[in-house]
Image 1 (spheres, helix red, strand yellow):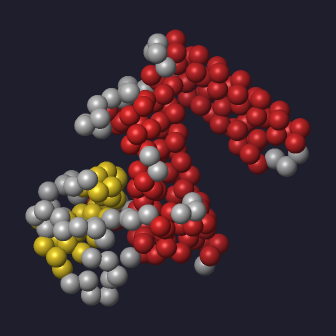
Image 2: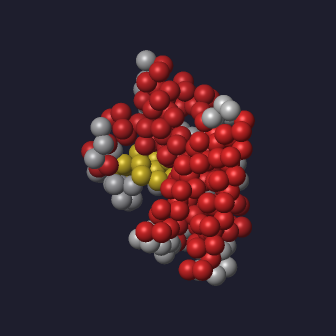
Amino acid sequence: AEAFNLLRSLGEKIWPGWTEVSMPLLYITPDYEYAIGFPKTMAGFLSLEQGSFDKAIQVRKRVLDAGLSASFPIEGVPAVVIGTPAALEKSSGEWALTATHEMFHVLQYSRGATEKIKLLALGSESDTSWQLKFPFPYKDADVMRLIHLQSYPIYLAASRADESEVKYNAGTAVEAVRVYRSLLQRQSPGDRFYKYSQFQEWTEGIAFYTEYKMAEAAANDS
């Protein structure tokens, strides 16, 4: 309920139109799974009385990993799929923010993320495990340094008021990105590493940014 409350009360401050998107959530406990707010009757689930909760609830015996924290389609419906705070080893507040992180991914699905990922042609469309198993060179020190060296001037360009500073930092960021891309191309011809880097930036990177901004907005709203 707190995760949905965060979305309802603060979501529009982060991403306009977010609260207009249906946000089903599959909540996984040690023994059961609760399908919350799904727009249809789910196969193998039984309906429960809503009680004081304002969303339809269905339940089945647990079949998924209790430690999941993800978002993917359930019977064709993009949904948050998440275990309990105890299973994720998070406090209730941390858990609610993690849930909003996954809710942002559902927003991305609603805005064409699936088609965008297909265009990258980096892995199977039916088995998305490649997104976690892709052999990106995270252990390469130069790659990690260049990730930092491109991100910091981008931050400076976005945060400075002086126009000349903005132009200088933006230009520096562009040069850093070119060097970064060139290094990745030498390691994997065909831009596969660079495309995967872009994928991670506009999926997990922006989702973590959203989680941070949600925490910031909640703190300022209290």
